[in-house]
Length: 115
Image 1 (cartoon, helix red, strand yellow):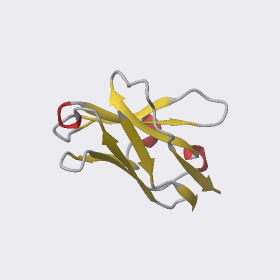
Image 2 (cartoon, one colour):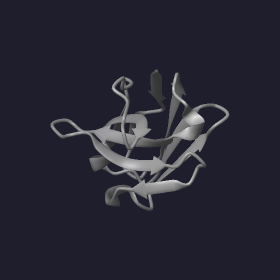
Image 3 (cartoon, helix red, strand yellow):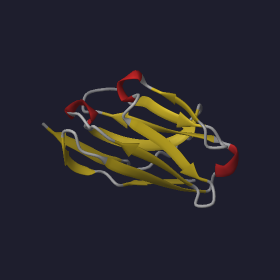
């Protein structure tokens, strides 16, 4: 299985980014997916998840109203649209299966928000 995140970068506070995660080797159409993030010195946290049919299932409180998770089952890809970014959103962002992540995590994509 492969998970390949992209779309991160350096952005000013208040800005936006769209992350993508292309997957391979997993039954993408039939499983829930999620975005996770890990800031320096902190544990990896689940921030958003989406059902196989494309219904957003959960957002952690800190991103509600600012982030939107979506997916394209034809492209085996899950997205995270991030708006109104804050410095505390700076982290490495990963996608994986929800609720039981597979062991082969991708490299993630770095998001840095400057204040």
